[in-house]
Length: 150
Image (cartoon, rainbow, N blue to C red; front, side, top):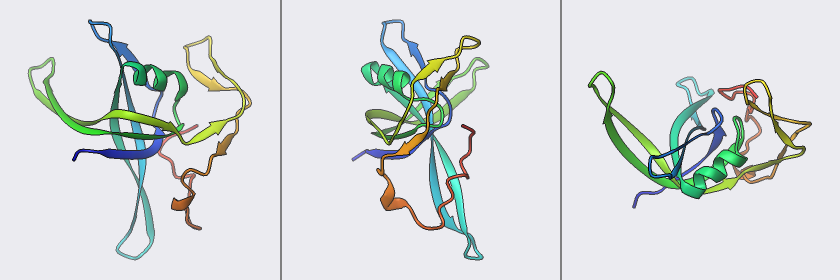
């Protein structure tokens, strides 16, 4: 069985393209926390950066509703692939091909697109945790240790 379930935050805005045959494909990276203990017993928080790919309606949905820093829950399959770059070198990557996607939080306020550069910003938005991951919370969780800015 090949099944991946990820919960994390988008590292940057999802990027959508269209194939020559007109199929939408969206690439994005999810930062997932990994908690461990150091040799001295202190907690360490690190992040794994997982490349993800969504196709067709999933690609359009993700591009429309998810932005850098948003928490996302997804289910997919792990798929390795290889290609030859412009210099003729063989490159390899492993991605999660998205089958299902869920919101993990909601925001108040509307989103708008900046006129200078097309960046997506929030207008009067405040994150409201939906409680979807309360079972993971511990008293010494530090949510300020994210690997990107809001």
